[in-house]
Length: 451
Image (cartoon, rainbow, N blue to C red; front, side, top):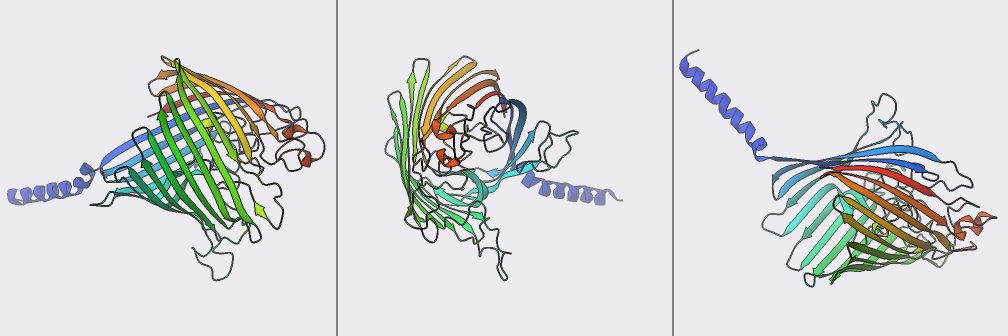
């Protein structure tokens, strides 16, 4: 080959290499993630979504782990693809609904266990203040997660316009029944969430917000996920606010729900909460209260249905982390052993709840601690002889081993109320109660690494 041809070939290859390398050179690759180990010594946790309340229960020890890997393909500040994956395992393996046969914690470990958490496009519409997120993404309600904090498929648009931040969104919650009847197609039989939310910064210390949520459930099958066909249409109107007053950070909200619980009953329900975090001495006092209305006659065919509706009927995507509980209300740090008295349902099986919670947290160098006390009762006791759910005390001590690694130990104990343990027929107790059940406890050892 002549020198000229060689040079042309080298030039062509170099040009092709440069052309194909441009996108990769322009793309920023970001990796983040976490790993969390939890070991439990308990007489109640089952590694699932419900506590094992029993008379003279057995004690057990088990361990589980969770890892998350976040990869962001960033073209520029206004365009990025966000992907988030999760790997869960019980030490020794599990074939529960959560794990099925993909739990790598069993002997020899080889399993297909990678779960998709998020995959969505995050971009700004050119020449506008509007940011779009399209795909399977996280959503947090404006009510501390009481209505729902979840990962779902949808589209959300938001904008920052001076002191005002409006948001509109749509999520397809379920589209599982298109084969249930001849001629049905995807989109014929669905459940959807529509969101309109606005926040206004009054000043640097005070923010107020208002929102409207609509859940429209058109699914015909009683096994529809995440709903049963008991509630067809849920409207939620709510207001919320945050304020910083001296050493105190205050948060509160009120929400009202109305709509069609089913074909014969109207829905009318309320939720409210107040939260305070106050700097005192070397730490902070945490105090909160939560109120959810309950239903007295769930099987009635007329009249109003008054139990506050969480986004999923079993409360699986609902939280109230300000309580800092482990047994009365599940803790936000939990992995797959994510349960509480009454399961994951904040309304405790539809009877509603009023709870008050208080605690103190502090850090001393690399060490940290918190201690908390909580009490809860049902808003409607139905036929039960008592409305008291119980009282919990818990404490955590921890140490920051490295900048990204913390180790902690937690102990929690709940004194069950009479509403959970009354003898006699099941109607004498609140939902989930067991006659003469022993008080539940847990001890938790945790390692948490974030990068």
